[in-house]
Every structure is written in C-alpha cells, then in structure tokens.
Image 1 (cartoon, rainbow, N blue to C red):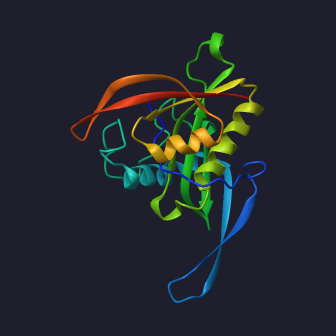
Image 2 (cartoon, one colour; image 1 turned 90 degrees about the horizontal axis):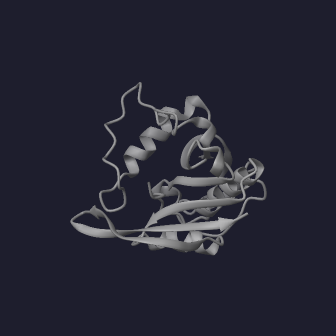
Length: 197
C-alpha cells in the first residue's frame, strides 16, 4: 500500500526518540511551547492511531476504504502487519499527531534485509513544521538498527508533498506502475521508491 502522507519540512531529530520543545504563537500573540516526543508505539496507542487515521482519511489520497467510525474498541493494531512494534508515533503534548509504520515487506528470510515504509501520516494541525521528516528519519534509524540494508516505499504519483519529502531524504524512484489506482474518478500512478542505508 502506498505510504499515505502529507508531511513536509526538513528538521531532523538526531535519534528519533528525543523530545523537543516546539514554539509557536497563538492568535492573541502569546507565545506557547509544546513538547514533541517521537517514540515506539505501544498497544495502548491503538485507538488514538486509529482515530487519527479516520480523521485524516481522504478519497484523493488513500487507496484503502475509509475506516469505520471509531468505536471504544477500535484499534490500528488489527493484524500481524499492523502491530505496535512496526510503528513509531509522534506525540505533541501527550497527543498523537503523527506516525510512521516500517516493517519487513514479507515474512521471507530472503528479503529480511529490507524494510518497507507502509504508511506515514501527520495530522493537519501538525503539518508544516518538519514532523514528517523527523518521522521519516526515525524510521530509517529504526530500520538500520534492525539490520536493514535498504528501505522501500510506495507513494501515489500525484502526492507531490510526500514525494518531495522522500526525495530530500535521499529516496530515488525505482519504478512506476502507471494508472495503478482509481481515486476520486481519476487514475493515479503508484511510484516505487527506495534508499540504501
């Protein structure tokens, strides 16, 4: 599944897990400081990640069907390909505002040296501050720590913001599946990208 994301920016966290203060200005001119933490997901994050996926889903950028309306028992960790150990989350003042999922593309030992980014999402209110790049950098560090030699991903051809993010991080296009998806009445390419670690 193509990585769904609209992140941007280029501030990199040195290890993908440190918290940093992010400053901003409220409408009334008061300065506010927020605490951002990138960390491995835990099972208890399942509902919040699911609710964020539901809130950010768009027929123009998602190849899967819209998730069901969140219920108290909803979780993003629903099968062996969607588990907490495959995900890093970004918390802003204790609230999840982004995530990236990175895992082996198959259970085969013959490509255990590869990791695949299978989703990257940043909440609309957290975009434009470099969070997408920080999540991406953290995913690459996680892949490296797991012994991966290469990371791959798929991204929709018309998702120029995500493609730019990946290219700035060093990913290159390795293939294109023309018109692979029919989204919002138009055919969209599936772009395959990769980076050597």
